Amino acid sequence: MKSGSDTSDYVAGHSDHTYSLRPACGVGGLALCADPATCNIEGHDGYLFNIYEDGKRTPLDWQACLTEQEAKRLGGLTPGLVQHAFERLAWPASDLVVQPPNGKTLVNFDTNFYTTNAHPTTRTVTLLGQQVTIEATPTEYTWHFASDGGSDGGSDGGSDDGDLATSDPGAPYPDLRITHRYARVGGVRPSVDTTYAGRYRVGNGPWRAIPDTLTVPGAAVDLRVVSATPHLVGY
Image: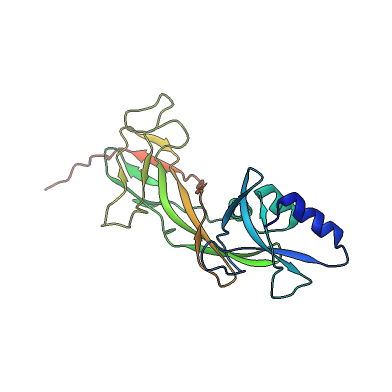
């Protein structure tokens, strides 16, 4: 097993060859692995990599123990590199559906909210010459019922303008799962943010979890809170 500096010196000393790195799997020893084995050398924690020369299918008879920074510099795919790609990719913002429709609701009425963004989205990218599939699944929704800060029709706030976090995307009427009652008439701009959990696979390898989640803010919609107008009905 070689350290990062020894690996760099070896590659530099054999410039008449080309080299590539692939993670050494923590279980099974597969060359193509999304979950590299960990190691420690010269007091530094790192990941274990197999070294390939001139595109050969069989790696060299030694492995490199590389820190995240060393692996990036030498062209090795690491979990941190996948996390960075996950954060830079465009994942869908959730469209907010409000019922009653047409941008109006009643004061002191259970206004219904939901989004249809409830299924995984997949992107395929090439990282350091390897095909990586990244999947993002909505796991949490943060509902902002008066996201303009005015809250329930006024700029001075209100008692029921708090946000709500759920794992539920809500549902159309009559299945009321995410509702809010506005205490005052006026204009509000509700929205919903979506938190994604990610996983990835290299080639056809096993799926591995991406450690950190990612939150995508949703666009606000215009909503007018009105009072019901009584009408006299003749008999």
